[in-house]
Image 1 (spheres, rainbow, N blue to C red):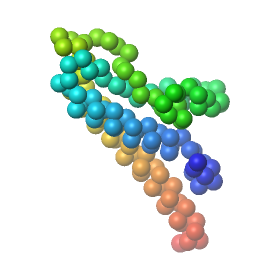
Image 2: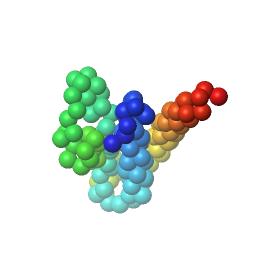
Image 3: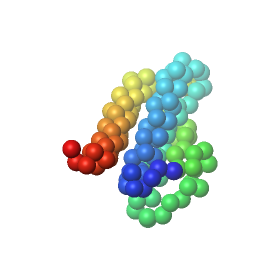
Length: 126
């Protein structure tokens, strides 16, 4: 469990975990673009986090897969424009991957900033 003193906003670490998982899931979707009957997977984390922030309650039991409320599910839209039942749209997945990479890099920069502040405090402000 991350230290609340080191990182007062532990949601950054949780969001980083979700972004890492989302990258893996999107990569699986891309790898299965030609697999007949494959249904794309999605990562649900933001909905859980928003609900947690509104209610102020942590409900780790919401997800059956990951304890932090991160879940991987099949895309709820069962629509497929292909005759083989596969619903992966490669352009959409590539756009999601690019957006997720930006999100991940932003979170890493935020964590690096926290470490820089901590290092500055340890050095005595020099």
